Length: 361
Image 1 (cartoon, one colour):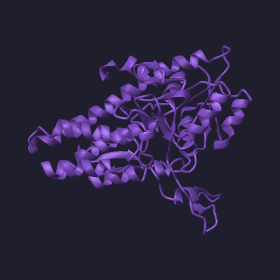
Image 2 (tube, rainbow, N blue to C red):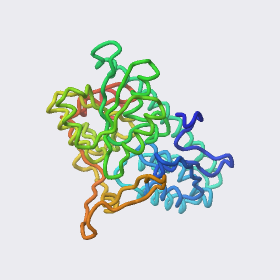
Image 3 (spheres, rainbow, N blue to C red):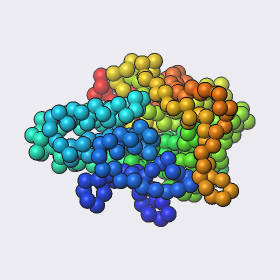
Image 4 (cartoon, helix red, strand yellow):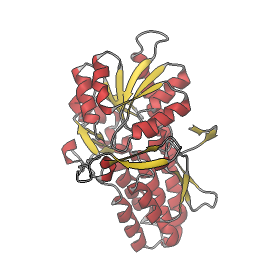
């Protein structure tokens, strides 16, 4: 996607052919800054501190993290250590383990002296595949948007939660890929953007992406979605997912479950957009998905720009108040109208997923 007229992916190989460039998403929307990762520890920090986030981008960053670790030492012991360190960076997004395991399985048979070049090639392949998958996903999702256009020339009102745009992937995004495709196709859309507490990814990232793309949108507080659905102002919901169980249960940013309940109560379609790499075929249902608990300060503090243009972090609760901060929740498949994948749209169920991915039977 473009930033100030310049095309960007969310991760890239630097000119020296070794270091890896990323967009520091913790600085958005007030500052656009890039960071160079030089070591595997840099990659781990970027993932754990959410300079990069979104399941597909976490996986892509982890794949390059393997490269950065092997650039220092490509021995068997280092390969094992690097992979273990990356997998521990964040527990919920399955793409992290998927990418690391893919790298390890490919590289382990190679002699140490040949691993590094092959690792960089595989990491680039993972990134390029992600772009192709997400663009295809967007094409399938566009057909759903067209289906919900009630009148020619009238915008389709879409509600989304968290950020599942191009910043959550290498490019295009998941939940927002159909929105970007709609703009390309001249289909008018309007997006209701949940602020997405506690890290405000909707306010900071989704709104920034839509603004840059010139797509009509409004920011709403997280608790406004149900009201807008009651008022007939939402045509469909599209969200992303960090891990999808084999039965179609989806794990996404905390608050997604409440949106799905409200959509079901108001007969509003609730779609989940996902590349197949986020499907965890080893989990029978969402109850087994590990839910990441993050730091209390994410709830107790917010960041923003003051009237002088200074970005500040401020406390919003009494000093004695503690906070609990689960980062994700699980939406049962029964509340999901359909899953949008790179191979098409299917029912949120084991049979639905297997109809598109029969190789997992």
